[in-house]
Length: 175
Image (cartoon, rainbow, N blue to C red; front, side, top):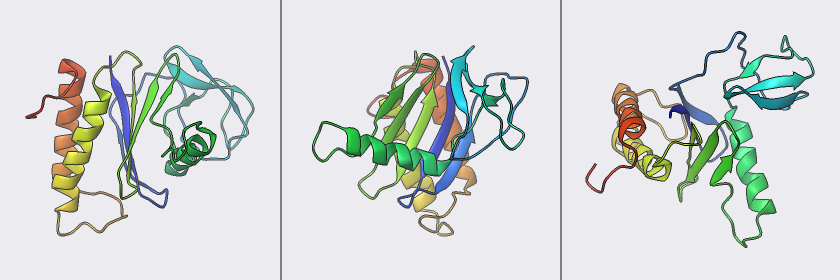
């Protein structure tokens, strides 16, 4: 079991933090952005291009990153398509090879974790990431709201939380 990536998206939809914690091994890698003129398919624990070419992307290339605006778009689409009135958007998106878990705060900050579908305790991990964000980014006098997070203590504590989550699963009340 593994946690692949963590993203923090500001209320305007901008990606303000990205941590690639674990990426499955692939032969060809490239980061690209929306809109996609490609067909993507899950294969061997990764998402690969099945059809189409663009900007040097060819069939067989693995998708390893998600653009922050796309995550924000997922929330908008999820809230519009939800049968629940007043839905805040997607909380979890599940595929055969990964689960995308989302936590949106009341202030509009979104925390997104991309993990192995068998990984347990992601909801508690998302709350822990929010706690780490509050303690180490928001309380940092050099951090400006809505701007990219560049704080060594935030990085260190986030990586520690991810390691604990991968090994032990859920966080207890006092962790």
